[in-house]
Image (cartoon, rainbow, N blue to C red; front, side, top):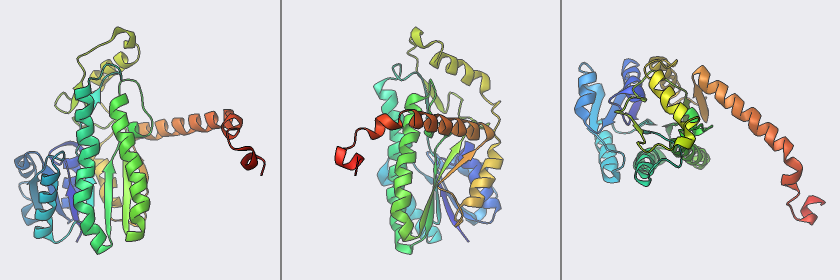
Length: 281
């Protein structure tokens, strides 16, 4: 019987992953700032559900949640770092306060929970870390620059972490969803910068408008995504990265083509910077 810990489990992907894990017969530690919102979602879960308070920006609270989960279930087999927040605005438009706030949750919050969970996994020489990124963690677009940079950070630390913990029997998977029909584009989840610079009307401004038009009309099905994630949790065949949604696959393919073409165009210039004895040796 696997034990799952899911952050940000009160709604969206977190709630769907918790629902699917419970339906699969797993024990679930579901955390949220207000655990009562989790309990109200799953009133029939019984002893299989442990709802705990967790603001991921509070490292002490992360350690307390892991301690409570371990006391109840004995271990954590799969951690889903799902808690996060969005930020929409051109890079120049985003205030320092807004940028720091999204980093506190998406990057430092992820690190807080990792530091709390990994010691137990290392001791058991088993476990699976699932870090929720975004297609924006692989390819950025206008209006999402600062948000995407937090997900680029999650991707970088996850890639390094995967190599560090693989010899210890622990797997790491980064999930890169495209646009899914959750509350992500709602004002309750997404902070849109009030500062608007007219010069960015055709780029980031267009993204602002598009986000409003797309809200609750996104192509992705969160329940189907949750099923994929739960099926991969703890699996030896789980990949380092997985894209979810046809839009994510298309954008990643486009970025890979662009990167390949640019590399080939500039290959001679790039390799010309080696020392002569290296370049000709």
